[in-house]
Amino acid sequence: MLSVQNCSISDASRSLIQNMSFTVSPGEVLTLMGPSGAGKSTFLSWMIGALSTDFRVTGELWLNQKRRDTLPTERRNIGILFQDALLFAHLSVGQNLAMALPAAIKGREHRKQCVEQALVNAQLANFSRRDPATLSGGERARISVLRALLAQPEALLLDEPFSRLDQTLREQFRQFVWQQTEQLAIPVVLVTHDPQDIPAGGQVMTLDSSHI
Ligand SMILES: Nc1ncnc2c1ncn2[C@@H]1O[C@H](COP(=O)(O)OP(=O)(O)OP(=O)(O)O)[C@@H](O)[C@H]1O
Image (cartoon, rainbow, N blue to C red):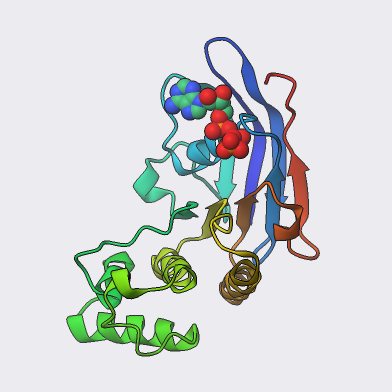
């Protein structure tokens, strides 16, 4: 369960987020909408602990009964995906994925097996040795989701991950992401401008834009 309680964010001159609270259950998606500049990405940055100290923040972030906003980024265990699916160009797809595995998964062979299994489950078997430069946009997007999930995050944040894909790929990719996050039963927060990205049955919140 992911819960934000009374979050307010402001910069030197104005208030961006005012007293926002919500709860997202495992496997559920909360979609955050609002005009450009409303503060959607700023809010996600706060959630992962990457917000510039120029902002003033109050509020609490809880995940699976543990408070996270007081922890450093690397201990929050929250995954994030951006618009651009960036993979390391000098590493194979398999190596890109293996990097994300938690250190607790020991042994080269065991780690390799975890990656192979994730690729098989995602219907991407045989992609392990591929050079990222040879992937299509849709394949790259799917690999980047797998990489985020192999890190075993307890929640996933998505900052407009679908927006660079064409309409057909976009629909397939959405289905892929919801299938993966439902399977792992993790709460998801999605930022998007496109109402078509909202999954059936999910919550929707729209940011107040009075400061823009
Ligand atoms: N590092 C920063 N320092 C100061 N101001 C910032 C910083 N990052 C963003 N802002 C400002 O905060 C406001 C909110 O930006 P943010 O990127 O969160 O909006 P958004 O809702 O995600 O917009 P978009 O839909 O265009 O991505 C904007 O006015 C932006 O200029």
